[in-house]
Length: 186
Image (cartoon, rainbow, N blue to C red; front, side, top):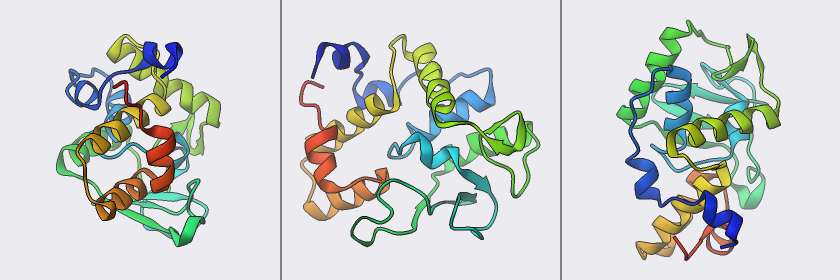
């Protein structure tokens, strides 16, 4: 790891076990989608709408699933649409946020000013980094979170089949997981 990466690094166990007493439900929801399931790229949640999967140009939260149509590796080796089951603890956080913000089907899950407009990529990434910085005291970005998760799962010495499943859950390839995200220093 570079010195810059080390300054932003935490282990997956440290991230998962951070104090989750948030006063703001949107911050809690964002923190949770990156720590309660395999962390995906910000873009995957930036274009997420509530409701049924009816447009391949968006991703959807349709309880109890996240449906990912739009993500970096969707066209990679036939990955295509990816459906992730939302664990109960994450569902509770998301439902609280959705209720508090009175979101309805068709609204963006994380919206900018109006529920039918999403954040631009840079603003959304900065918002996520700000939430993690406030919680951890480190200037973390989503890549730091993904590095922590990849290093954690690779330390478990899982089968190649399970590794492929974990990579798909992150929206990446097995090779990227092994060669880019794994940080042995963690």
